Every structure is written in C-alpha cells, then in structure tokens.
Length: 384
Image 1 (cartoon, rainbow, N blue to C red):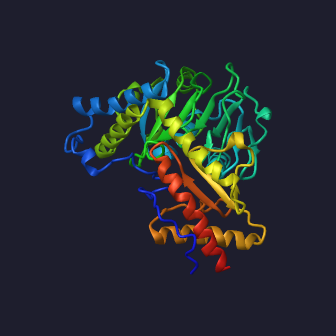
Image 2 (cartoon, rainbow, N blue to C red; image 1 turned 30 degrees about the horizontal axis):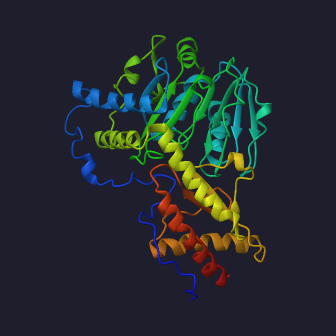
Image 3 (tube, rainbow, N blue to C red; image 1 turned 90 degrees about the horizontal axis):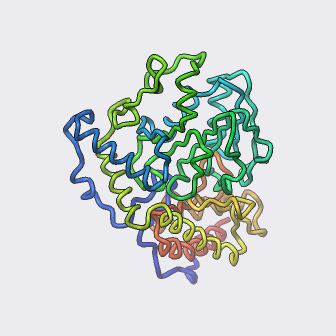
C-alpha cells in the first residue's frame, strides 16, 4: 500500500454521519443525569420540561409567537406525514422533488393520499426544479435542504409573502443551520437528530395561523389515524402544542434536546450555528477547488448545502463504474482507519460521499478529514 500521503493528523471526532448526526462538542452521557425519568410526562414538571424544549427552540429559531410548536411522534417523518394527511386536499398541490426524501413525499401523496389535483416538479440529483414555475395559489410541499443530494433552496425569495395555498417545508437538515423565512412558511418540520445532534424518534411540527385555520375548517376525505389527529370537534387540540404530547415521549431524548439547545445558545444561537455550518462548507469548498478528482454533486454553488455536503468522484481517468467504486472504497477505508464513519452516499443517491457539516461538527475536524480523503482516494484508485 502506498503510504506516502498518509496524514499525520486525525479528526478528533470521526462522526460525520448525516443522521443521527454528531453530538455537540464535549457531549457525554452525563448530560442526561437530570433527565425526568420514572415519572409521568403528563405531570406538571414533566410538561414543564417538554415545554422548555419548545420555548428554547422557538427563541433560537425566531419562530413567531402566534405559530404553534409541538413535539410529535416518529421524528421528522412523522411530523411531515401528520401535515400531509391532515392538510392536503382542500386545493391543488405542487410537490417539489430533487432527492430521495422529496421523492418519498411525492409517492405518499400520489399513491396513498390521492388528492384530485397534484402537480409534480422534479429535478435530477444535484439540481433544483424551476422555482419560478411553482404556483402559490396551490399548496406547496418541498424539502428546504435535500439531505441526500446536498442541494438546498438558496433562500426564500421565490416564495411570495402573500399566498393562497399553504407552504409546507420539510426542514429537518436546515433548521438551526439556515435562515428560514417564517412569515412565508405555514408548516415547518424538523427533528432533533440532525443539526442539534439529538437522539431520534421525536419530530417538531410548527404551524402558522393559516395552517391552524385549515385544520379547523377542512375535513379530509380520508380516515386520519389517531397518532395524526390534531383537532377535536373542529378545534385544534392546543395541548399538543403546550407540552401534552400525542403519545409518550422519551424523557431521555427530551433531556438530550435540552442539552443541545443550551449548547446552541452558548455558541451564539442561530447566527452562531449558521456560522459554524457555513465555515465547515467553506473549508470543503476550498479543498474541492484545488482537488481535481472530486466535485460537489450540487451544480450551482448557491444551492450547496452547508449541512449535508454531497461529493462525487470525477477523476477523468476512471469511467463511471470506476468512479463509483472509488467513492465506496474511500468510505470503507476511512471507516477502517477510524477517521470518518458513515460518509458513503445515501443508498438511493448517485454514488459518492456525504459529509455532515452541521453546527455540532468542528471545522478543525473537517480540515483534518480532507487530507485523508486524498489519501483514501489514492488507495482506492490503485485497486480499481
């Protein structure tokens, strides 16, 4: 094996997976020692602990006071499904998809919910659909950041402040790392396991007043599972958004979310978290610009994610199969070396690498990883 490029510095934290994501710097299980376990989550102190998570998140994210925030089952997926099952069907819907999770929402809507009027705007991995074609007189559903393609919407300028339909966004790898224009969004979902590095299973659902009005005035022509129901007798079940969760939450996960939120505040809140993520992306960008064998999957620099950075092997001396084999070889080698875990592309995405660069990841660890990518590529290429 050629070891001439063997780096002498390793990332202090080799966890670069895109979900569950790296814990915040310095985390240990001791952070959970005050978890409210062995007691009812419906007790007064239990509700207070849950409500503290919502309040702290609201403050950091800048969620308007008249928007409801609730902890719901089944991570971000559960939050999105609750919104789709409960809200869609009142008017036509535009579905945007440019990676696997967006494709999943399209499949659910078309094959399961089957509303009468659905329009799908799609783009290949690495690109966005034409956002100018979106019709905001209809409901609009999209992922803010394509976790499996490394492509995000550049901003919210394409969304009009006044719109007749609801704007529904899956923001699970964008919340706490990107600016979200709350005044233009009606439903926002995310989970703790992404940018906060929290434990999985719980999602967050954020509803605008317009979304609440839809819930209270529209009855879908489909059965709504109990786990998705947010209204009773035509009125919003306010308790869901005041600490009374639909089902039993893990109070260990709640405590971990609190720990992540306190850490987020300590690094400057949302501006600090965005700065950390963008700094990580900048480090990779500088390396890509001087490294001929690799490029971003995202074609437009303005749409490159600062959390789920997706890279592709482009060495012209290798054919497509060779490039794919090199990418797999890099991921395997770095896992064996204990340098970077879980950086292979998502199973449905084009062959390549995916490096999580959210705010819990230190830029020094990203910078330490880059020479190892060069080394692993050299080793993998020798075997092709």
